[in-house]
Length: 359
Image (cartoon, rainbow, N blue to C red; front, top):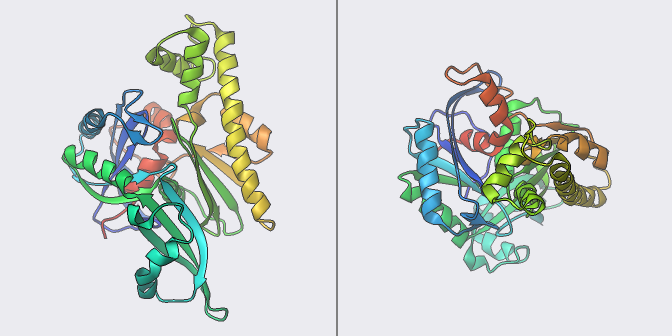
C-alpha cells in the first residue's frame, strides 16, 4: 500500500476509482505543479447496485466487466494502475513515537502498530510516513496506515482479472488530497477539510500545514438518496437513480414524478448525511483546540445534489464550496466542456490516483 504527495515523474499510471456505483479510469499527463496537467483519457462504467455493499465485493465478475468497460470507453492502452481503498477495513492514525530512523521504524512498525490498530496485525498491510521529528524531545509524528489484507486482495484480484497491473493501492482520502494539491494554491495558515461523498462512503481528510490532521470514513452517501426515493415512490433502484439525477434535488425537472415526495426524501437524506459529516468535523474541532477549519471543499456524486453545498454551509457555519479536480487542467482536445463540468466533482479520487508515479 502506498500514500504520498503528487510527484511529477514520467512513468504515469491510470487512476482507477472503483466506487460502489461506478468505475472511473483517469489518465493524465502531469507537466509541473505550476503548469498544470493534461487530461489524456477518461472512461466510466456503471456497476450493478449490489456489486459492492459496505466495501464488500459481492459480484466480482461485474466489477471486472466494469473495469474493462471503463478502460475501453476511455480508449486507454496503459496497464499500470493505482487504485484506492476506504471504509471500516482501513485505519489511519497519526501517532507520536520515539525518535528513530526510517529503517529502524520499518523493523519495529508491526510491534508499534499493535498498540493503535484494532485488527490483528498479521491480517493487515501496514505502511507509514514520518511527518515530523523533534530531536530535542526525542519524539516524532508518524502517519500510520493499515488495511486488511483480504480487502487489498479483492482489489488486486479484480484489477488483475481485468488484464491490468496494480502498482499501488492508496487510501481514498489521500488520493483526494493529491487532487487538491494538484489544483489549488496552498495556504499554510489554512485548515481545509476535504469531504468526498461517494455512493456508500464519505471520505474526510482535514489538512493542516499540508498534512492530514484528521481522517475518517463514514458509511453513508449518495445511495441513501436513491433508497429513500424508492421507498417514497415505490419504484425500482434504477428508476429511483434516474429520478435522483433528474429531480428537483438532482438537476433538471422530471415531469413524471411527484416533486413534493422527491424533495422531501432528498431533504431528509441531506439532513442525515450533513449531520454525520458535521459531527466528525465537530470532533476534530473539539480535539484540536487551537485549530479551526477555514474551508470545506466537497466532491463526489453526493456533492452534485442540488442545494447540498448551501445546506452544508448553513448547517455547519463553515465556508463551503465544490471542489474542482480539473481546475488546473490545461485545455484538452476531445472532451466537451459540459461533460467535464458534469464529471468534475466525481473525479477527485481518480485524478488524485493518476498523479501517482511508479517511481
